Length: 155
Image (cartoon, rainbow, N blue to C red; front, side):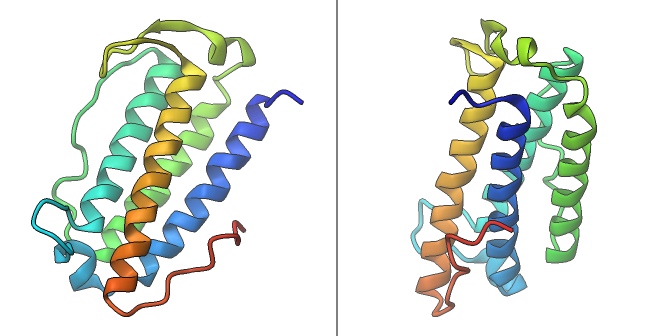
């Protein structure tokens, strides 16, 4: 079975629902300020990165507008972070209408990270980055004594 455009979106959506439950599990102070080791970032910073990548890639893929910037640096409350996540995903759903199966197969140099890759691969990278950071969020929650959400629940 080959993964189609709508199947990819559903995978992205299921993963985002789980990521948002991890965000919601954090107390606000720890979401923005806690890291279990000096070289690690607070989970909110990872979520901002996830949103920046999603926004940059979906606009580039759907509209051919390639612009990567930190659009969420000023966010400092849990409520604003969650609202921004919802807004970015709403934008993705709207722009998804512009994406075709053929668009996902286009291979070109990545304007942000360099190598040749397909648009599908870009979205896969974004998903893998989200999963990686969500896993860090699980560890952070456990070190805080907070039970993270069940991993297998995606709805």
